[in-house]
Length: 69
Image (cartoon, rainbow, N blue to C red):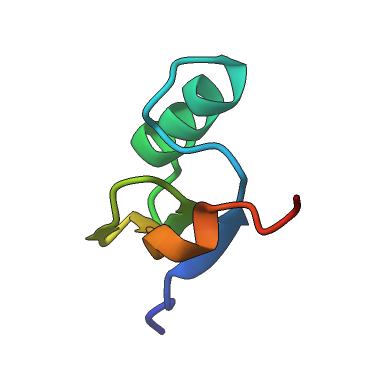
């Protein structure tokens, strides 16, 4: 019997552009996940990225501007 990998989605508001406790923990998860566990981090970033273990969606320029006056 073959086992399918367990896919784990992690949603965060931290990207890997800065170093802090959250990004250190996420990096460790991606590096040291047990065999059979396939984590993928989903976040938002100024720079979009689409890798097997990491998806960062960039926002359109107009969405980042405030409309409040």
